[in-house]
Image 1 (cartoon, rainbow, N blue to C red):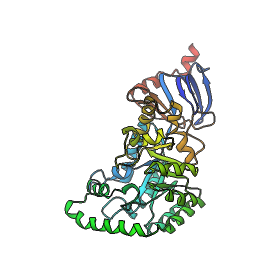
Image 2: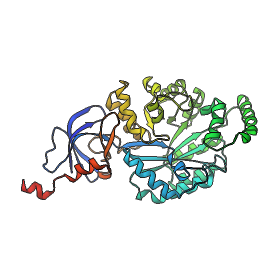
Image 3: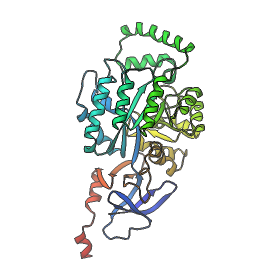
Image 4: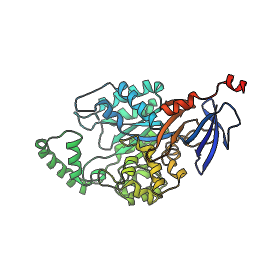
Length: 400
């Protein structure tokens, strides 16, 4: 099948008018000018970019329980999220699954196990290529044997090393942690009194106690032994970056400041920031602005974090603001995350790559018209469907 009359965003340049040939789920030809076939799909007015690769999406847990105690089946939640992802141009999605936050929250051992088991059972039925991103809290000893077993079974595709202890990392400002407890985990003002004292004691202990990487190293070693990439998370010091890089971590997720991001890049690590952060121009926790990080040259990947639509909109906004040229901006959500995750078969429009493509109509708000995964349409809006239906049949071509 040929797709023609398209602006093509390649890894290093833009072809203003080009065509693609797709066979057996892969791109077999990329040409400038018209397709050498009469039965080509005409995407006049549309731009073709590679399918978006999202390494960190936090949406599923909240889709399972959109309001406190309003719980829905994992399978239903994932299928609904899957449709939204396809409609925003995401073709490869890493569902971030957290372990053991607190017993009344979704991030418990039991819930994490259930989510991961269900996703591995249903992933072949999904529109997008669903992968599992396991989030490991460095102080959670109970998670170690569970996660190691899942890694051995091949259930996990990416691991991140996390520490949400207040007083450092994402919550170096403890007042923001308290706000999080109230707004997201449902703590009342009455419940927060004892919490304040526990937070203060934890901060005091951390100030004089060296970080213990024993549990994290066990998980990292197991992951690397099974060819699973490992990321750090919310790094706020060069020392954290150094320690984790020495253990084999190759991705730094959401560095808190420029110094941490620069240290990660100096160690050859990929750096991820949130696409919503970049789109809005600020972090919702008061940390490093992703747009500032991109301007400083210390960010090479964007992730959906909590808002999938930002993955497509942000690269075009980056171009509009004159921060990066279009090919480089699109690489933030396609080629760069694919390579960071060890995926060599996707992320760019090139011969031999998977035919994961998004046909979009640029504008103030970029519109997804068609999303293809492996050459098959997994999403079309009304405009895309009309174009697709206008595709000539073999009989029409014969008559011509």
